[in-house]
Every structure is written in C-alpha cells, then in structure tokens.
Length: 85
Image 1: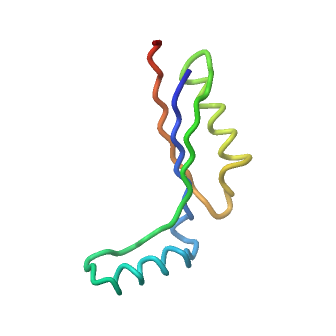
Image 2: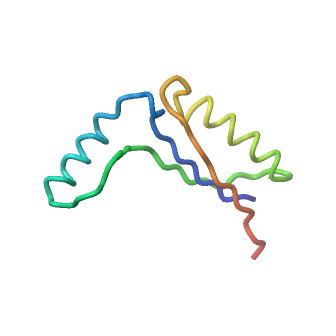
C-alpha cells in the first residue's frame, strides 16, 4: 500500500482569478513581498499496487482522467510506501 499526495494547479499560462483575489487580500492585510499566488486542489489517497511503478501508472491515469483537466491544469504527486504495522 502506498500513500499518495496529488497537487493540481492551473498551468502558468492560464489566468487564475481566485489566486489573484487572494493575492490582493494578502496585500490589503499589509503583507508585503507575496507574489504569484495560485489556487489549487489537494488530494490524498492510499493506493494498492504490486510496486511503485504500478502505483505511479495508476495515479497518472487517475489524474489524467479525473483529478485534473489536462488542457488547463498541471499536477504533481508524491508517492510513499506505507510501512507494515
């Protein structure tokens, strides 16, 4: 079993109005030096697989088919093996 964390964000070329709104709010609160705010989605799951390569293939398929819109979004993920308890 593997723990998987997936982060989905808009591609840099896609306008992120929510990110801009949050960045504006941060500035209005007086925080300086905060730029390029982006809003995204975070998914955490446990995935069964025979090895990390099989889990990676499954996670890629899940991201491509369900979690991210490949036209507008990009994703990255971290896969960690769970220790048997």
